[in-house]
Amino acid sequence: MSESEVFVLKPAYDRRIRVGLHTWILIASVVLVGVIIFWGTFYGRYTLQYLSEIVFATLAIPLAVFAFVSWFSGEKEELAGIIGATANDISSWACVGPIMETFGYEADIEFKNGCYVRCSFSPIGNSFFRVYKFIQGPESVLAAPLIKARGDGKTFRETRFPVRQAGFQEWMNSETGWKKDVGNDESICNWLEDHYFFGDYFGPRSGPGGRPGPGDVSGMVFLCQNIYLRSPKREGEWLKGKTLGIVVGFHEPNDEQQIKAFYDGLISTADRIIEYIKSQINLS
Image 1 (spheres, rainbow, N blue to C red):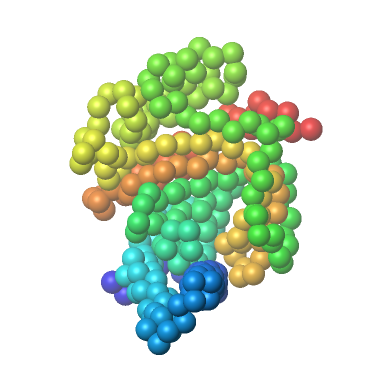
Image 2 (tube, helix red, strand yellow):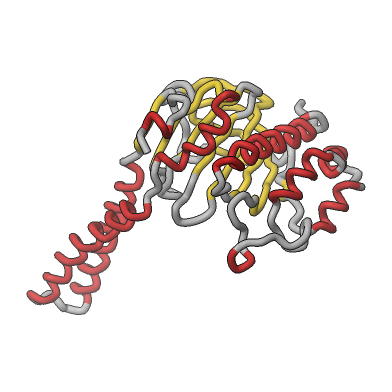
């Protein structure tokens, strides 16, 4: 697949991350070699054979890690689904990767409805879809701290979506207004019925070994954070402010005809939930 086919809507910038992962590999290698040398010195094992083991550890282990990362790293093509499906609703987006935590690529997207989305695909685990809306800010800054998100439990306490149908039914009759609104929103319920995977939530779902399959959502967390988001418009710029957000573990549908409906429904559902929360929390 050519780059022009992958990026249906051209990214504002395409940043390849190299330093972070390689730095950790170098540090781990040096620490490992230091431990081996200390152990050999302590037990008096400095022999020609042992020195060969040091050389092996110094060279072979980093090479093996690099080979593992290269083999399992994702490709930019993984972003084609989300970008192609939502191109008409995107204001701007950026391509970043591979991300050290997932070995995959990430799309940082600004939508015309005010939502900011970080969609990351991992070749070694779940993919994650993060939807944010600023309730204070954003302020544009040129630097971000190492820890880029801190929870704000005073404005809104982190809440996980129920993993059982009985829990969701409690939301429908909850004294907490936004939970009741979410539980009684027909469009939210219909989308969740089609995609949410967990226990006896809306009945058994198919999947290999009883696990989530293509088109399934495996979990949702609602949170409020003081955050630095990578700007989808300008490289090196960060958006700083207080956000309401939803983190979703998901598996992208295999059928290309279902991808657009999946992402449209996911973004719409997240946006409606955020608006319910936003309208009922104290922002003072």
